[in-house]
Length: 586
Image (cartoon, rainbow, N blue to C red; front, top):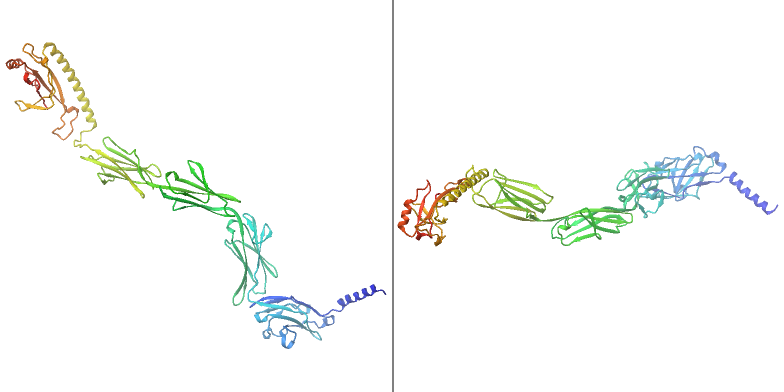
């Protein structure tokens, strides 16, 4: 027999021994964690020698020894006796006849931690302690925390890796279950809350959180909590993950300091802000004027140290990062004191109408003051207003009341920043005769003009006929001041005009008579109404010159024929040639 044949025979003998000659063995976990106040499950299977198979019956018992194998000192549990009297409370859930020694212990305390050995006892000679193999039980006060993992597009990534907005994200929470009744649960906490899907295995609990990443989840911490419901209180453990999302600019806005409404001449600063990851790279300012965009500058702030009306309008801020852009706008409102337009004026017909237009920001108010006193709508005055623009107001006042004195009308415009005013000087004529109006005035002018034209033509014809009958020369002198009175107490009027010596009358050449019509308007009538054209008076006067001989003059007077009714003839001696007398009938 060679050496190779001998080795084969020895190897075959060992194999046959393992099959035909079984030995005592046990399978146990090396260590188990158990929650204080809960339970622990020890999974256990054993093997015995074949010769003891007949002793392993239903009446077999299992024993557990803690921190040793001495039955007197280390026995802590016996399935054949009441567990209430044992150090450990529990039961063997496996069937010993089937070599299953799985055991559950309840109400664990911290002093239950230790190394445990199993012992099997059956009928006959089956009594064996598995001293070479033990299980370590660790009683803990808090449960083991779960584990959270991040998956992007179904691929696991590190929790600090950033996720692009719009990607599909899954968070998985898994936890090893400890013995508990009822069993533990997994819960998620986050803002906002997201629906979850749960699954559980025999020794592991799993919960998945699925959503599409948005900027709202950036820097949001998701926490997974496992909860054990014990008799006295709940015990929990948790794990979390903070999500990092990259996104284009969001929530872009423009703030204005001190305010978007600033008084003309003041300073103002516009600040642009935006939420973006990564942060905004570029800020661009532009203004809008008459529909045209004008680029101003870059940077997150825009400052005007001294504002005026040209700064009024819309301002736009454009922000940009590597993922996109966004815009925001603000209206800059420049406020100013009211200004009354130079076109404000008054018109006069049978009533007086005045218009006043003012522009200001905020939109101004308009008031009317007559002779220093504010006026409102009444039966004699009517005030109306209309808005001509967002900052302009136009008011009109109609005055029906006639005043007997010169009045000052004032338009006053004001807003929160100041006041402007304009004066209108008005002169009102007293109108006491209700019948006098523009129509009676026009009728009087027409009648007077017709009468004067007829009288003028008649006078010319008379003078031409009279001159053909007489070669004398006469001079008509218009008077403009009272010189003396006649026998009836009526005044004579004379001016300072001088007649030439060549025109002096002689006895041989008596001067002819001349008639002249002189119109006077009585500017101070006795009545209280104004006299129209039809009230003008017509007076006749005859002025005659005489020679140097007084007696000849008197003779001529006796020879002069009588004048028509209403006309008077006055004697003017040669010595009084410088003063031609004229009587005026009014």
